[in-house]
Length: 505
Image (cartoon, rainbow, N blue to C red; front, side):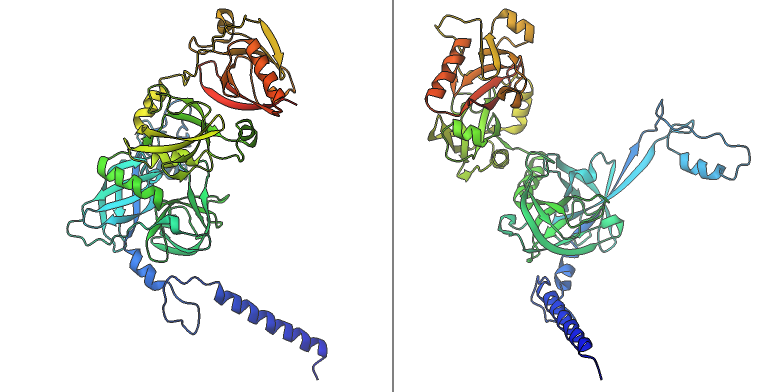
């Protein structure tokens, strides 16, 4: 006779096993609607079979110069007849350690996908083909074709290649709409991990709008579909077989997948690919402003109910808004009909806009919301202009009729008149105007904000200051109004602007 304790244990085991089986069935992805097999979950084989032909292996080679000089590793001197002679000869051949100082051939593998079968257009990551001397595209049917570079974009890590499809029937895929993807949607990644060949993995969208600090337009799709070395440049498909992302990065201590992979969304990539195909380079919109985040303290100082948007810290001379349309201290909350929730939203939406387009920009200026019309310039031209100017903005000369006061102490700072002597002492540029900070007290509110001697206060609460007395008067007025924080616009020694808030309690 079986003891009751064993029967109860057996019942628990049967129930637990049934539950696990049921959960396993529910959690299986279903890209298509095939007939459910009696021995397992629905298969994704039909979808994979249809897409595999469009995914390619990218093979590159690069000749690295010999490592001569102090850092070189010399060929070891071995005794005559040493059994290790052949080994070291092979190892050091063409590595710069021999007398010839020859170059070393370095090869790498990545992935890509065909988007135009007739033209032979292939998309991959820029880092897959960067600095390559030769690029070959290997197709799933065994064909290998030489590729030429159409164009690259380092900011989004996208590259476009071209092969000659003559005599070959290529398979192409198209971009889908990544904005429609939701957290939890099933996705399929196809690539060439570790050089093994076409490999299919399945997972879900784990998160959207990820910023991993890899570039100015980070807006990655995060997925737990296995992405490993060699998957870079490969496509991330939705359930319809459309490319909604380009697999480009992973977080992993070992180099293998731990379920945290990132893909460039098609919304961003498709526009870049179109520009590279058309021009061989990118042509992004440019607003011509320097921006910084809107913190809770800054929002309160500006009379905003919530912290949102991008605070304009400076206007670039010669840029599209150097006519006063947008000014330092404005907060941009909407651009061309798109809400700007955070500072990082603005560069991306501006860059995606066509050069020369006239757009409506909604700003908050001194607590009042208003709309201005701006015609965009070209970012690539703006970068050259910005690198050659000091970033100062002409927001007022700062000259006042009030008799000057030599120094004043306020909010943990000692401020003084900006004259020839203080300019020379701190190395302040001639076109910077305002009140110079000569000392910052340790452990003060100003020190907590990273304010340094030599910086110049140009505005307080969006009003220009030109003397130490102006600073004292503005702080006093803000305290009388019951304000808890003072918003300061500071200029660096070269004129680059930033905003900080300082507690006044």
